[in-house]
Amino acid sequence: MTRLPPGDTAPDFTLPTPDGTTVSLAGLRASAESGVIVYFYPKASTPGCTTEACDFRDNLASLASAGYAVVGISADPVEDLRAFADAERLTFPLASDADHAVADAYGAWGPKTLNGRTFDGVHRSTFVVDTGGVVREAYYDVEARGHVAALRESLVSV
Image (cartoon, rainbow, N blue to C red; front, top):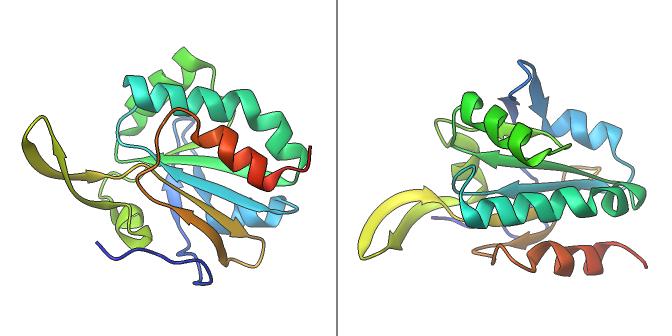
């Protein structure tokens, strides 16, 4: 798993969303004043991923007022993302990276061990991409709880 360091160009993507459209990094960059927060999460509707998504939801107004757009990406099918977004009232786009090509490009896909079993999957990771497409911050294997607060503190002038 090769990590994407700050200063590198963020790999562009266009991925399907639960509402039947697509979301692209280029489109989000064009609509954001400061940049885009791209976060990868392992599995919709699991406890950690729900905590993280709800933290982004609850801090979205503050992030948006600071000029940041947010997109969550997982390898889940769009149907699972639709149920997740509806159940948690998520107001930012979720995108399906079913073949994990985007997660691979960001270094967020690779071997994981859970309950003594090793398998390939999404590593909970977050990237701040500026409007020029450059990775300004890259966080790998973050904790679901508290990560958004720390990110918000580093990005938003309170």
